[in-house]
Image (cartoon, rainbow, N blue to C red):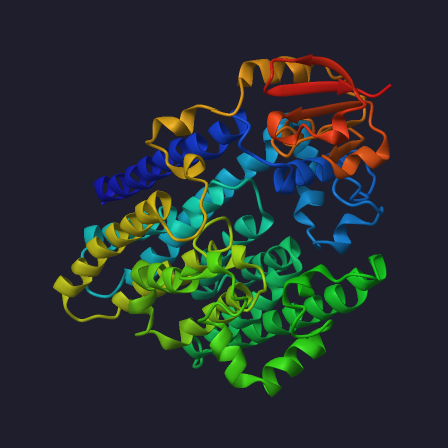
Length: 480
């Protein structure tokens, strides 16, 4: 028995160790080579810097008019995580994101192991299922692509979902309640998604009264939190704009308006889920590609556990009904929430099969399919994907072809830590630990002391500035 337990622990450790190396080679290398951006890593790091100094962020980084950052995204993670910036500096959020995904993978393992044990299977079979689920989750295309584009709090929040599954199953209700709160705190729309997740679980626990009470309480909390934050707090912070609805403005300017549009236009709503309703050529095929990738990554088998499909309804809706084609595709961080639902859903269904051969077929096929889909999304998808950011085994991933990184770092060192700076997207994450940082060219209106841009941003806006130093690809200006 002790030998089997050791084998299980060693398998988990090896997989997590490989994941640490892989994800660090993606996100940390991207950051070192200036392939992280002002929107969003530079902004979020600057927000955390303000919080660590016990002050609110005013969004002047990317807005001409000051306003509270929480009116843009009600993200309380940045408040909670801000003390870490004194230890890990500009790498803080990237490290947090890697660690959180490892935590989510461990939750997937614990949930699948709990589902499979006690069903007449050998311990090695149960352990193998848990390890296969971990691999499927870690190499799910939505998780992999998220590491190629900065940091986002919805990635961290998503990693609590497997633990919600596990703690409900194990009747650890206090831990479950903490996880519900933490998911909601990440971003205003996470509470809406969690409502659907918990509604779907009502069917699985329909015969357990105490569990149903806890799930119902979680649903009630999410609804109250969503309403208070989006209808009261965010409008009070900025009456002119509710960011969450900004991508659905063709439906209305309020939650009631959006719901009313969906109710009164049911066929148009269904149609918009599948077609390029913006009629932009670059949007052609993006939705079909995403659906195919989702189905091949576990979505097909999830049809055998239909109540779990309810969990993906708000995810699909917020992707496909948005009037921003960047959300439709397989890239960026817009697909990460599908990972715990599809992976855990597939292995939960497979656990109930009677034939061991079918179980093993699913255990082997699921990670292989997830890896194959991820490889495709990193190679030649229809969706726009910055390939050098995610193609780990391509030599172009390890070099910056636009400018000399060493020279850029030399210029960064010449800017005083207390100076106000306006900079190109790729430089702002490296300058974020300061009071005054602005995104070029909008930030020129704030009269910064220094301007740092790459060759693509040199324009008439910099014509009247004093050029301090350049190698022809990176330019450092001083304004006063």
